[in-house]
Amino acid sequence: MPQQRKIILGVAASDAHAVANHLIAHALRGIGYTVVNLGTCTPVAEFAQACREHPDAEAVVIGSLNGHAHEDLRDLPAAKAAGTIHCPVALGGNLSVGSRKDPSALDRLYRLGVDRIVADPTELPAVLDELRAAHAAVYAAAGAAEPAAEPVLVAS
Image 1: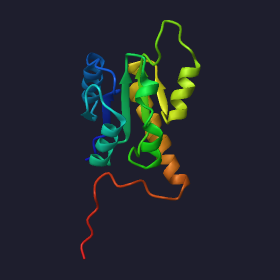
Image 2: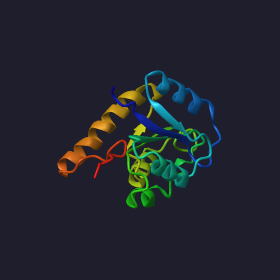
Image 3: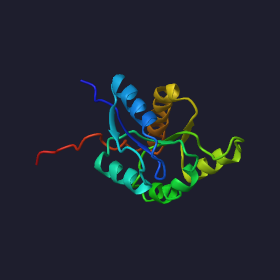
Image 4: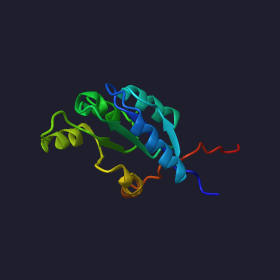
């Protein structure tokens, strides 16, 4: 039986918008994902803790509707560098403040360590497939096996 794919989902630290979060969790569960939903107002440290608790997670998906994603994700580079967030990060929502959107805001988010920005939530399953394939390719290019989704017990 194939293992169910798992993602970690949450809303950025300063953001209490819950409706889209629940709709995305429901939609992903409906197509077979296990969703670890951290809910709203989730700091990077909580995403990192969830990654430690769920080493088989293939992606972290973060929503931000209040436009403060850049500030909320300021600790992301350190978490990725330390390996506490070990999988790709996808971000979606309203990612900057104001009615005029500055394209450099997206570049700043990529520089923080966001792997993909999702403009339309209906694209998320395809984005997750792409991230999974890219992540596997990185391990293959390095000549290393991906971390086991579940611990492997060896009898002595």
